[in-house]
Each structure stands twice: as structure tokens, then as C-alpha cells.
Amino acid sequence: MRALIFAAGRGERMRPLTDTTPKPLLEVRGKPLIVWHLEKLAAAGVHYVVINTSYLAEEFPASLGDGARFGLRIRYAYEGDTALETGGGMLNALPLLGSAPFITVSADIYTDADYAALPAEPAGLAHLLLTDNPAHHPDGDFALDDAGHLLASAAPRLTWTGIGVFRPAFLDGWQVICAGLPGSEQQPPRFKLRPLLDHHIATGTVTGQQYHGIWNDVGTPERLLQIETSANLIGNTKNIANP
Image (cartoon, rainbow, N blue to C red; front, side, top):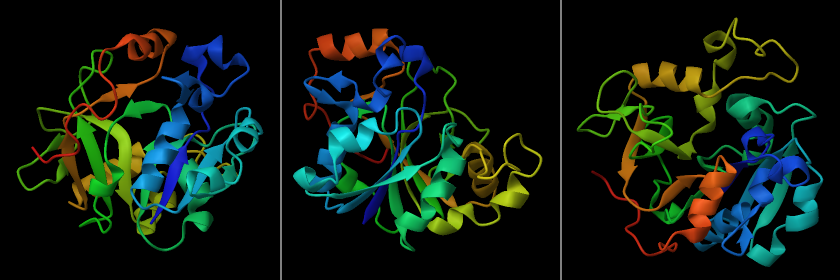
């Protein structure tokens, strides 16, 4: 199985830490954030990882190399000087990801989620891992029904962890779905995943599950410090579980 790590963002809220270091390469508990993900992906049987890059793109291969020391093959999907957002980034990386479903991971999260527990073949076009809403995102993103399908407007809502499994066909028809949105007419196109998620959720082709373990969105220096000083270590809590 292959994986895509979203690592192209500028990390504005993490400045000045990100003035010279991309956010995914900031160290948390002794290693860069992205390395936690690479090691866990390799442990889950993933052998090929695509990392999308933009800001300070050259720092990634300089730090991570070709992935051999992690037991992985790493390829880099450069997006240019301006990041292409999650949807455009996935589209840009698609030629490197092949025709099978692939795992997606946001590089700027810290979690003990077990990637091996994700479905290798999602029931629909995508399967998302959701968690309880953090204080900085109290309204959440999506709800889950009893059958495990995502709902865009129901309650209670949960927060998407940034982790999921997508089929390449999830991007089919993106031009129509995103028509008129700023950036969608650019070359290469720049657009978010959310419009596509909303579209496919409405057709019942996006499933999900709730995660009850450690998950942190490392979006600010304060949150980074909280992780460093927390008594909880990765591996001390439950892994992925259905509600």
C-alpha cells in the first residue's frame, strides 16, 4: 500500500519556528513530526510514500533522503512556490500514487493511530479517521451515522484527523465539482478537498470511524509545547476503534 503525506504548507502560525524549518520537520519528543509518521507507516506495511512539498522543499530530501533508513521508498511531489491546498496537492501527487487506494496523512499532527487498522479497500471512495473536537476546533467537521457513513450537516460532529484512505477515483470530476472556486482554473490547479468530500458524502460514498487515542494538531508553538510537556506518550492509549 502507498501513502501520501501532506507537507507543503507554510506553517504561518508556527512562526518564527518555521522561518527556517518546514513545520513537518520540527522536532517533537526527539524526532521530526514527519518521522513519527514515516516510522508508523513502515510498521504498518506501507512501502512507498509520496511527500508533497512547496515551502522550503529542499529541506525534506536533505533530512529524509530516499526513505531507505525507514524501510521506505520516498518520492517527492513538488508543488511549486505556492502550495496547491489538499485537493490540488493530491491531484498533483496522483501520478506517483498508482491505481490502488492510498493512505493520506497530514504531516503536522501527532498521534498514536495505528495505520494498519485502516481499511486497505474502503467501502466507497474514501474513509476518514475522525476524533473528538479539540478546543481550537469545537464545531468539528463531519458526523457519523450508525452505518459508518459520513454526514456533512448532522450532529454531533467530529473532527477529521487528517488521516484517511482514498481511492484515486475520488478525484474524478473535480473540475466540475470545484468549478468557479478560486484557484481551480490555475495550472496546476489549487483547491481544497472539502468541496469534493461534501459532494461524495452527499452520494453516500464516504465512510469513517472514530479514533479515541492520542491526536494533536500541532498548529501553534503553544500546542507544540503542550505535547513536549504532556505525560502521555505515544502508544499509551487505545488505537483506532469504531464507536
